[in-house]
Each structure stands twice: as structure tokens, then as C-alpha cells.
Length: 429
Image 1 (cartoon, rainbow, N blue to C red):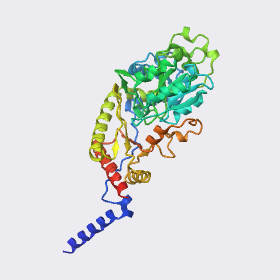
Image 2: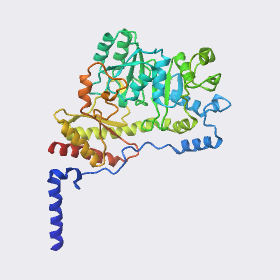
Image 3: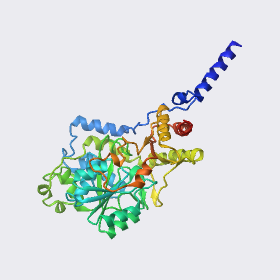
Image 4: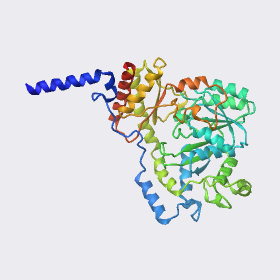
């Protein structure tokens, strides 16, 4: 009997805590995640072995080899180009460098206006500023892609704009046929930021083929992980040659590349444009190469888990949130989760929801948070000069959650529970 009495008392205390407003964040009955949401994909052992072997020789500089065929960076460029279907590829120290060089190699001059997404990562307007351009922002919609109607409007309002840099933020692709048609009508060069869209296709071809050139990333949280790194990809020989020289192919070093045009295209470029020393190291290329082989396998795993999470979220809380819709024609890679909370939820309740998720082991980011680098109001170095009401409103309810590959399937069941329970707690607060 005493044991029964103690158990009943304990249960009563637990229920009292669960029902008290002050106990929401510490309620022991609530679901909790114990895994690290920022767990990156590990480097396969073969990549580690190749990197160690490279370090043992000391030949980590991409050009410290007798010929292009023996360069691990050149081999990596070949494999990336084969995967995406591009003719030319130049490996760089970051995707930010790739985006910056892409604009300079496409002909951007100091002060040129560049149309770009109002919703993207701050590295994109930073690259525009780095290249000497002036960013002009185009609205993004609730599917988290560039609004084509506003693109047409901005093309008319900014007749001197010569470039459109579209960002496939979080792997979401706009109607690229409509984007390209609008750019062509106004004689604007289209370029693609594919940092988040490695493995994503548009109408059967890898992203990055509608524009004149594209950039992909191998930063730690992307589909290939070298800590930092990026690639410029194009079918345009002039862009490829200029990029290689800007990156550091001085004198005759272009001959140690496998995925650039011939010497007749380079001509006197090494003496006419500066060397910014933005090359990828052999160590980065070594750890990237085996990851290319598993891209499709990992895409299937990501998409299966994403389908489970989104289906269950909509079934349980579809009246409180919505999932961005993929544009018809794209084949996605869902390596992260985005959802839009209902505007019926107040700003205070949104913050409570974020606090609840965090307190129970699941950091959920709000794209519109005052500290988020994806919120255009934080780009003081390249501020928006036009109102962006659609993007601003969307960002106040747009949430972002990683889907770590190394988690177990059961962890995503827990993720759904934490999100749903946190929404309940926020609405009850």
C-alpha cells in the first residue's frame, strides 16, 4: 500500500507540473530529442585514406603534380562535371567565391545591377557586393522560390539590370522556364546559385543548365562535405577559362586542368586579369570524391524521410502549418525541412513554439528572426531599396529544420512529436 500511495503521489505531481503554465518548457512527460541536429555527413573511409596519403606526400597544392591526370582536384572536377552534365568545371575554396567569380566571368562591371532572390542566404548578396555589383531584390513566395511576376516587374523597373542571379534556396526551384523567358525578353544574363541544389533536377537535367553558369557548394551542411569548398560549372568556354585564371591558374597552369577549354581560349588571360588565389586544395577534393558516388543513394534516403515527416505533420497539424509545394518539373533533394506556420498564430506564440522546440532538443530556425542571416533586413551591406511585403510576411512564419542523414528513422518520429507538442504548448501559453 505505501508503494501504491507513493506512485499515485508521483503521478499527481507530474500531472500538476504538466498543467501548470510555468512547467511547459521542463515538462518531463514531453517528447525530447537527444541527437545533435547539426551532425554533418561523415567522410567515407576512402576519402580519409586519400587525404592522409596526400598529406604524407605534402602535395596538397593542386598544381604540385607532374600533369593534370595526377591531380586529385582535376579528377574531382571531372567527376562533378560528369554528375551534373556540364562541360567545364573549376574547383574553388568556397561557393561564395564561385558565385562571385561567376558574375565577374559573365561580364559584370562595377555598379551593375543584379536581380536576386529576397529570400536567400546572406552569402549571395555578399558575393554580389564582392563582385562589385548592386543587388536588386525580387520577392519570394510561400513556396520559398522567386516570384516570377515580381521578377517581370523588376525587370521593367530596372531596365539597366544586366544579370539575374537566382538562388535555389534549400533546394527549391522556381519555374525556370518562366524565369529564363523573362530574362531573355529583357536581355538579362541568367546565372544560378545551386549551393543547395546538388542532386536536384529541372525537367530531367541537373539544376544549373538553364542559366549561363552555376555554382555549387561543398560546405559542411551541403550534399557533399569538405568543410568549405565550391565549384563553378558552365558550358561556356570563356567563363570557364576566366574562372580558372581568377582562381589562380597563372602562367601555364591551366594545362593541369582536365575540365577547362584549350589554350587558344586562355590566350593572354593570365596577364590581363588578376589572380585571386581561390583554388580548392587537394585535401578538400580528396574527401569530396567518394561522396559523389553516394549522392543518388543519399537523395533517396533524404526524400523518404522527408515524405514521412511532412505527411505526419500535415495529418496532425495541417490546420496550423503548410509545406512549400515543389514546382512541377523539378526532382528534389529534401535534405532539410521547411514549413510555414499559419498567420493565425501570433508572433508571441511563434516565439514560444521556437522556445519549446529548443527546450526539447530540436532547434527550429525562423527565417524571419531578427538575427537570421537569411532575413534580408540583416543585409546592411546591401540593403533593399524597395518594399518587399510578400517576402517579409512569409519570413515571419517560415521555419527551417535540418534532417541529419546520420540520424535513425526513429529520430524523425520523435522530431514530428516535438514539433506537434511544441505547437500545442505554444497555443496553450
